[in-house]
Amino acid sequence: MKIGIVCYPTFGGSGVVATELGKALAGEGHQVHFITYSQPARLDFFSANLFYHEVSVRDYPLFDYAPYESALASKLVDVVRFENLDILHVHYAIPHASAAFMAKQILETYGINIPIVTTLHGTDITLVGKDPTYKPVVTFSINKSDGVTAVSQSLKDDTHQHFEINTEIRVIHNFIDFSRFSLKPKDHFKKAIAPNNERILIHTSNFRKVKRTADVIRMFEKILAKVPSKLLMVGDGPERAYDEQLCRSLNIGEHVRFLGKQDAIEEILSVSDLFLMPSESESFGLAALEALACKVPAITSNAGGLPELNIDGYCGYMSSVGDVDDMAAKAISILENDDVLKQFKENAFARAKEFDLKKILPRYVEYYAQVIAESHQLKNA
Image (tube, rainbow, N blue to C red; front, top):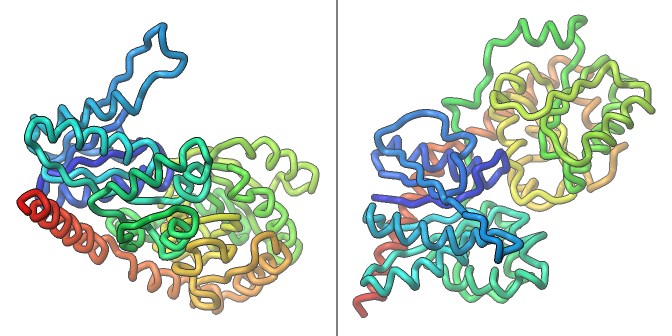
């Protein structure tokens, strides 16, 4: 198949999933065309089956804001026409699904029928999409897609709750590529961070309020009082400055390292003992899955799609959003006993194997084939 993929080219979950999916499809012999405004962060190697088409948006004095959606639609028309694509897969509803629909309508004037699959990832539905400014467009774009997937049952349920959807939404969970995410031999790195064999805890996110990063700090303060530990805060965002100040005010700054954005997150996970994710909302919890794959059990909230990933008492524990005391107590119960920690690490890896890319990829390929076949049937009816 010749597949066009539209995504945000960032470190965010939707961009990561879209890029890793495209790379895997290319590895299976499909021709994959990425269409976005800059090269995706994880599109980091050459393949004969991978192509990148940049969407350029010119500044005009007439516009206060560059019309990216129109530029994207025009680029989609160009790529579909001249690369003879079989299907478009757009990740994140805004503005990709609506731009794809516009392109589809234009392509029909050339006698081209291009089916569209839209994947819903989270905040495009739970936050941005519910805004009255965008809700009618999001609803319309989902309903006009030829296929729709969601990364968790929770997100599917939220979509039906907040939007009038009259098309089927198929749940295809996020995945993990074990050729990248697995335990790496990084003992020297671990010794540098924890010279006295302290436990190493880790949090990764974009440091937005919804991630409740201050809860991570407060949780760690309670853990540190019981178990000698270090905390790695990976990522960057609006809450980082507050979190750094909170560490100072709690007098735990010497035990916490803020590492900023990191590409080789699997190497940092490989020296970690416990992953902390107290989020207020998570459509799935891709960062937690990456941790599990590196044998790092997770302490998470029970928000959104996290219960579909984190099995309470097996590969980690869950608590109610904001219950820092309970999260800390459960973390301590894992960390204070070597045998318990070892068992949770093994369970984490076993759980992650259920989301192996090799198991999830065929579901996408099968779905593409189904959507293409149904689209051709409708055209010929």
